[in-house]
Image (cartoon, rainbow, N blue to C red; front, side, top):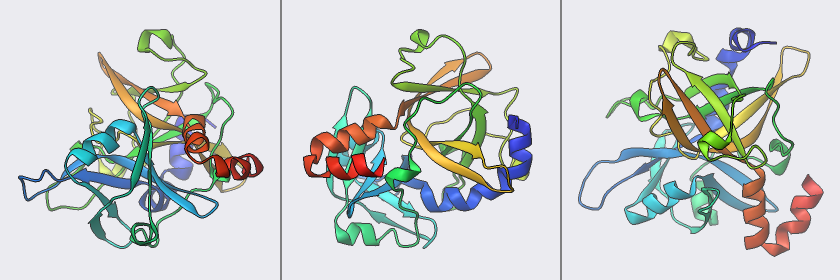
Length: 257
């Protein structure tokens, strides 16, 4: 199934996934009374431990002021606090959530390790870049998500300071851009606000369903004439971060995989 066929068959079915599994993140500077979009996160649970997963630089900026998350299912926003652990080299980070903070995400989807895919994505794989670009947000208006269906970049990785063993590059072509839900308008030209968002791989199950697994976390964008190259760190870096920070969970990670 090619990208356009995927959009026609499954584009409209992505919204429930996005609303429940992709968390919009904001920051509020202490000297201002309004919040601004900052990035995107996902919720992960392993052996009763719960984290907010995003890019490390999102957590760093959120700590400078105030990190705020949105629960689109419940329809509210709230301050999020917890123990943050980041890997600056890979630009991935986790924020451990206590029971109170985790409870604020009622109705949201918590990823399990079985929802993650560690094997290297292939150029032929269909992926979804899902997040909350600033250009889709309106102050005082509804929060709109981007679901951009594309494939892996098949060019040189070194030109973008990337290694296919650790990273995933996605093509975001302005001329070829097709939104998963075209009636909501074209995808934005810029992607500020999707930092830390999950990159999902869509696997055709041979029926009217499609299995979605997370393969990477978005960490940066390279602008080129007429297109963008989106850089993401493969999800194994997140599991490695958890394994090093929580040695008692290594068995659970191994068994679940």
